[in-house]
Length: 340
Image (tube, rainbow, N blue to C red; front, side, top):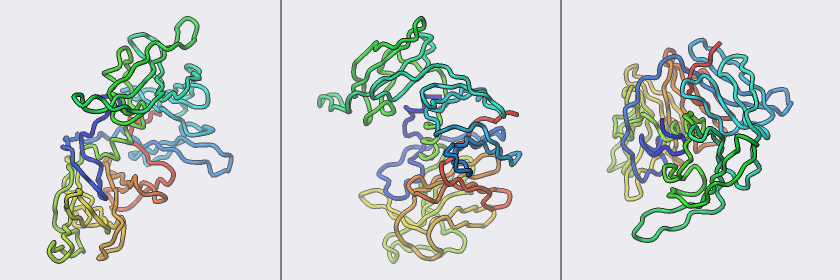
């Protein structure tokens, strides 16, 4: 799996249902095995100002506490088999077994590097490295397209634990900061194979495994749209490669600025002949638009609107067609099985 911070647009911009200037070719996504779980964070109800790191097992229908932390962890990453998870909290990097009762152990103390934006283990040098972003993007010459970003590469001594800068240069980038760098242009910076929570969220919001937008017949219970009489609107549909009969639908139109859409938005199951209203009111085409995306797993559909605040991601049971969970504070991500 590519480094999660360097994932390109490979499966569409989620459902870019507000303004979509381009579509990326969607790649088929294999069915997710039912050994997965959803992990998320929420504040404690006790008012103790702590964060619960929780895991929802959709097979057992069990919601379990993994860790209680003083603040949300950062740079959360799992190994490829989801045997353990690493994360930053406070002034240290921790590792814990990805299972019920996993106990975190501190690996290293976080270095005091100005404008640090990444920290990882390099299997080539067998030690930890960090990157900082001391400057913004600079234009390349006109015969070399794109931008270059200044970076500093730091490395921890295996003998003393001290940190020193081993390289200061610039690399191709798409924006500013570590997440935008082209890591293959930075020598000696290989990351250990990890699956990052930030990368999983970005893939979800970009619509990994979704087919992109198609014109479609109206959802059950809605009227057909006539582009000549309805301001150029058609019903458009976003479905997965694996399950094309299930989709998110919204009325939309295409013009020189891309695809513009409105509400209402629906989750539609053509096989069942049902539609579930997600946004807006039935029969009432309005603005603003919707930025909905979805992902299926273990008999459930996770639906979220990353451009909306306060609504939360929702989990729909395919067996009952009903909502079973609302995640108000943070968007959950599908990860490997949380072991007993």
